[in-house]
Length: 277
Image (cartoon, rainbow, N blue to C red):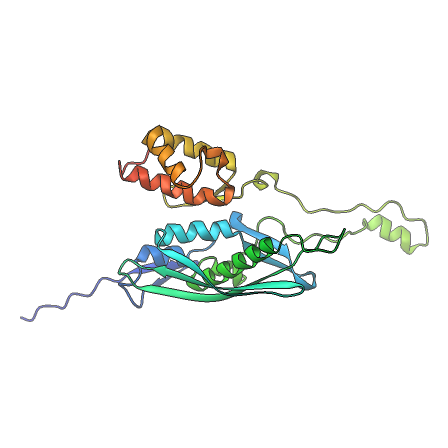
């Protein structure tokens, strides 16, 4: 009797809200594909007004950096391929390289731009370096989206929770009726969008110990750092800070907090797999 052929195990990942079977396995782990293909949480999605007065959804560069760190374990880098400073705009071309577990490198090229900001007083550029950094961040986000990071945001699937379109000023029906009759209209009551002040200062994206992502305040991040300090000991904690050029945790810029948090978690895992929180 011929033996029945064993069906190879299939890897199923969530792509947005759908489930898909991986066509090729071995390069990236199922978890990496899952994280790249996952939907971006609403509280990371922001909204800005672009050219022509249109509003666009986007994510902060800190979120993209934290996501890349979580997926590739710091095995990624950015190379400046080209840059140019024009009269009114700067542009930067970057090459984002990521390395998978088997050593395979994949890279994506992308362009980013930023308008040059001029001082009203003397008409001089305020900071070309800041404009270039903004263009570089724009390019990195675009390159990362080609790998899957925040793909849903830039495809228009995920909508921003905060900073939605402003409501147009609209007079009450009674005022409109009065105006139509030729009378003197009363004061126009303006409608304004509701503002969620609870999320106003939550601009530090951390990958939590359970693999979830949270947008928190700097003070909340420092509280997590304090918990790790108690777990790994003050000496190890100080060594991590000093290796990154910081004497105290409150001196860490918000943009660097996701990377510092990841380094601290890594240091703790070397001591004990059971995380303290």
